[in-house]
Image (cartoon, rainbow, N blue to C red):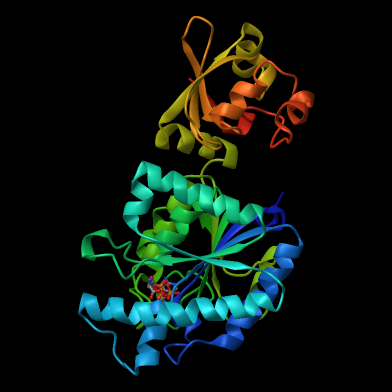
Length: 374
Ligand SMILES: Nc1ncnc2c1ncn2[C@@H]1O[C@H](COP(=O)(O)OP(=O)(O)O)[C@@H](O)[C@H]1O
Ligand SMILES: N[C@@H](CCC(=O)OP(=O)(O)O)C(=O)O
């Protein structure tokens, strides 16, 4: 498979759109451009792709609504502008998606939300619940409450953290340049486009050092850093020009536009490493000998039939420890059922889950992609 085919196969994508692009370089919200992206995103949704949008532009839209021509230095003025602009931003997203009968939801996050374990999990469940019912979350930083120290600093990082959070296949960063160049194209006429690279390649650091535009905050440095963060959960990143005609549709078709930055490891390996490193266990499943053998030696998923006991209180998607009958931990993984459901279906064949619970979420108690053997 060529690397661009990953875009054709993606089932869940995060699309981040920068301020300069959304506001047509500060001339107010570019509703026409936004409408064109929405049309293309609606096609992806039709195709079964789940989409999360990370939309910058609150400060820029607020500035334009308030008639401010220069980005203020004072934090409280920035926050005020963001509060005004966020209204315009979400109204526009909502109205544009309504044309396609697609609902949107506003999600405002701070760095604190993603570093606090409970809020992280809550944020994750909310986002997943929205995706499950076909709603498109429109995410931005919660500019009203953040202070200097806890600011993400830029929405590129937020986009990558959301990519990790929802376990997306990829992050698409739409910006005002057609992609990452080997030097800042606004200052160097001979700059050439990088079409594909490993996100981890150190040679990229020197290329991205050119600073940001007047409205954007991060420039390419934060986009590169975002691609490395996204790579931690095995996701690819594309940095691409949002003004390229049919940009999202063309990316989906596998066209070579923009800069594709690839993770070092395959998705499953990276995701397992990320799971192992990031999550604490919330409960314990005791497995019978057959299940231990199946998951440790056979690389199988854990089915309810192999579970003998359930301890602790956990929700769907949380991390549990799997122990053998002597209590020795053999694996950890993200469980598909909450604790009470798991207690109800333990020991049962997967074909009986509907009979026992009245519904079935997944055949597996823990899917093999979400299991780490310890
Ligand atoms: N190597 C590079 N390739 C492309 N753009 C670069 C590079 N170095 C710096 N830049 C600058 O990064 C800007 C995009 O970042 P930014 O202004 O933060 O946009 P956004 O609002 O989309 O996040 C470009 O306008 C460009 O001037
Ligand atoms: N939360 C801010 C984000 C600013 C920001 O990161 O902008 P950008 O570098 O254009 O993605 C806003 O909405 O204005």
